[in-house]
Structure formats: C-alpha cells, structure tokens
Image (cartoon, rainbow, N blue to C red):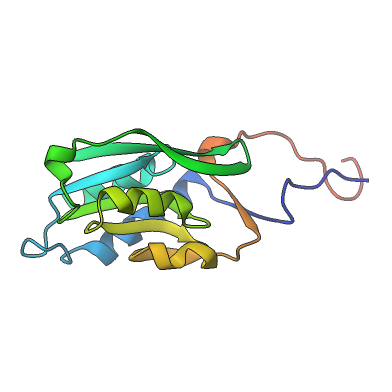
Length: 167
C-alpha cells in the first residue's frame, strides 16, 4: 500500500507558479490604492506572506514593507492565532492605504486577528479557501476547503517511484 499525502487533496505550487500568481495579484491591485491609486505600505504576514509581499511590493514600486507575525499552525495543525510581532503601528495606523499580503486564507482566523489591528487595510492573498474568503478583499486562485497547498518553501526535490514497474 502506498503512503498518502497528509490531506486527501494536494495542490503543489512551484516557485515559478507562485511568482506568476503573486504578479497577477499585483496587477489586480495596481491603481486601486487610496492615494491616487497608490499604496503607502505593504505588510506581509509571516512567514508565508513574505515571498508574495516582496513580489507585490516590487511590481507596484512600494518601498515601505513591514511584517506582522501571527502563529496559527504547529506543522499542519491549526491552533488559535497569536500575534508575536507587530509592524510599526505608527506607520500603518488603522491600515488606511496599507496592503496586507499573505500566501493563503484558510479559515480566516489569522486574518481576523490582523484585521482587528488594521481594520482599514486592504487584505490580499494569492490563494483562498471558501471558509476564509470573507476576510480577503483580493485574491487570485480559489481552492476547495479540503485541499492542502504545498508551497515551494515546504518542499524538496526527490525521486518518486513510478506507479507501475521499477524502471
């Protein structure tokens, strides 16, 4: 019997695909900031939001980038979200003109915590699941709630045995 993935459905995202999807997110956000279409800052939700936030900030020429660290997973088990590092709150204030970027919204619980601190920010994720969609203002790709997304920073290349045969 073959070992199965940790979840019934797996969606594997390569670095190339993440880059394309994050650029698509930037294109969707371009010109929609409150300052003549511009955004004043990007706040990445660590750790998964850092790579897409970097790409969005580059594409939209946003030079002010900060992070908010929210721990809500222990490996693949979701727990109560807890902020362990805040951005410069004097800069981000209530979130007006700020883009909050994350890789994924799952249940939305992490974003609820983040939105409580920056309620007027625009929240953008690359991927979204139905249960958390109401916490996101913009996203690129929706996946089913029971899909586990394997991000490139979680993966390593290795040999995979064929389904049939050995050569």
